[in-house]
Length: 313
Image (cartoon, rainbow, N blue to C red; front, side, top):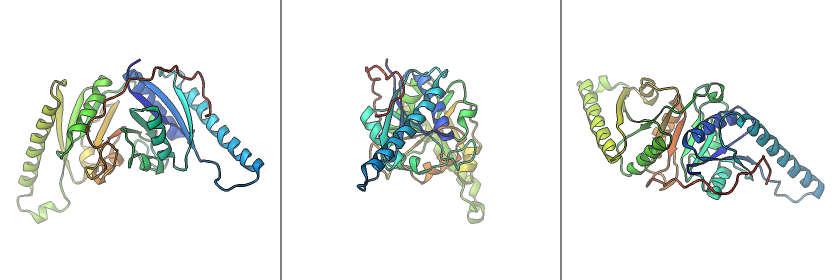
């Protein structure tokens, strides 16, 4: 079976269910394989009575087993293929998922929003923060409440694009994601109007219009980089700040919004910058954060037969 290897970071709560609904949708759409992983804390490093240590390890394993049992029940009937199951001990759940992603040659990591987020929006908790500052593969985040009413299919990939050195690689990765999931591609540039611009510049409207025209030229050039790709839709949206500009953009049910990592971050890793962080928090749909650098070629799904039922390793 060909297709992307999708790693689902699952916790037995609403955010885990949101991520599961999104991961199942992607795997079903792209025809890839799924790994469901639960990361639990490691045993206490201090040496103690053997019975106490054994009880703590047994407790951690039982919690992970319960989490995977819940994931298996939630996956039933979604149409997703039988996954493989992984349990990993690490002090940081995001860093643990990075280790699993490397070990399984994952092409994509999917997680949910931190529980404090607004419904329909993404809040960045500790797991996301670790992934968004070091994952070697793209990270897809599900908004809070996504599992309550998931779309029947993915509908479109929108890429938040600004012209910058090295943007071609992530742009190609986004186009590949769109092609793999058989969805159209839209390039979007947010033209931001600083607060108080009219008070500082007599020709503020003319200045904004020049920025919009430049953005349209940049989008035309970016679409040209995709070569023989299907027709690419281009759009600009203006507003005072990222949230207002993005709020003026029409989003379809089943939309996925992609944004690029900061150009100050390390090559071939996700690194959330100031602008991309604002986009993640303002987006009303799942967000795909792409690593900086050349496009990563998606690997074929593993040939190994998936494990029949959840287990703890």
